Image (cartoon, rainbow, N blue to C red; front, side, top):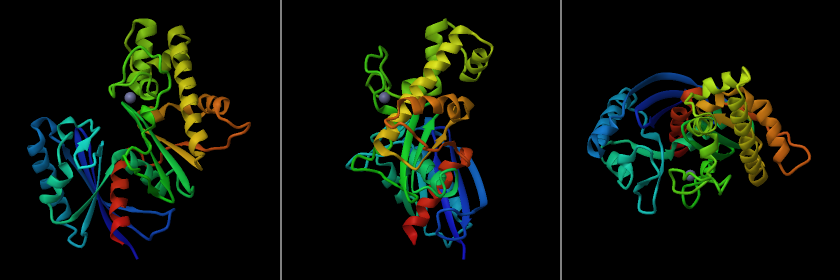
Length: 306
Ligand SMILES: [Zn+2]
């Protein structure tokens, strides 16, 4: 017996839709992608136009699946107590009743979740975390975020900030503020732009992370120092996570998760700082790649409907 589910991933530049079939409700399972498409989010046109654009896209995509009565939606940010969007990098959504507006334009029931939680859920159920009871999903890209899942269900928390590990403080004396207003957030040291800005401060040169890694391999002193600091900060920040949650597995996603050193020298740094003489926590690369967000959104629908 298979189930149909539709997921939508609303990003700052593109919005993606997927229809999948799932064989059953177990935690390690196969799935088939039936249809997948994307459009430009058109965030620059403002809130009203964005709602219209996304609603029309979802209506058209879902018209092929009339049996689906609920749709999962993943998006950046969360909502405040009254239902207004907050902390979204699609800034025209902040302060707006987006969920309400989109629901008003569509017949199906919509189930919303933060995109990092969708990532964690997809990897926990269908990807690299499958089979582990408690999984922490880390996203390291232009920003740093995360989500915590138990048996495939993520925790949201009373303030909808569970897993927001990127804005815990690593170095409070850091002279530059994070975009969130605090100083020395994990995101400032482990995001791609964070590492690049450290290299710029050391060398006076601008280079993308990929090039900094190559330069370090070739022995460039500034790049070596920059990457070593990056791995050390990674070890400190992930060991904090393990000390607090002791998850069964940690799955890395986002562009920075492609840095192979995170799984070798980076893992050694975790062991150096963790509060245990031994640590076996698997810290693994995602299996679903860019698809995790939209697949996690589709799983939201299934959980709520059955
Ligand atoms: Zn911050």
